[in-house]
Length: 92
Image 1 (cartoon, rainbow, N blue to C red):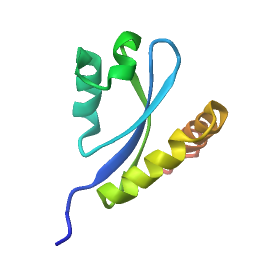
Image 2: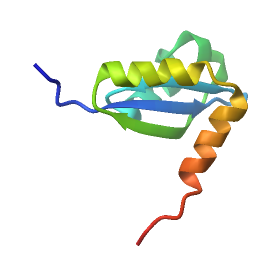
Image 3: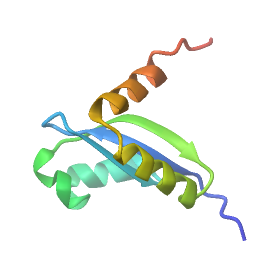
C-alpha cells in the first residue's frame, strides 16, 4: 500500500544563526510547533526559528534519506543549497 502523503525535508534557521534540518508532512504546523517550544530539544533555547528551505518527497523513506544526507553536510554546503534554490529565476 502506498501513502499519498507528501513528505517534506526542511531547513530552519534558529535565532542563534544555526541551521536545523528535519522532515514533516505539514511544514507550517511543524514550524509553529518548534516556535511554541514543543519541537526538537536541540533548538528549544534557539527560538524563534525561520523556515529557509524545503523540498517535497514522495515517501517518508525518501525524505529521511535526504535528511540524513544533508545533516552530514557542512554549514557552507547547506547555505549553498538554500541560495541556489531561492536565487533561481522564477517564470511568470
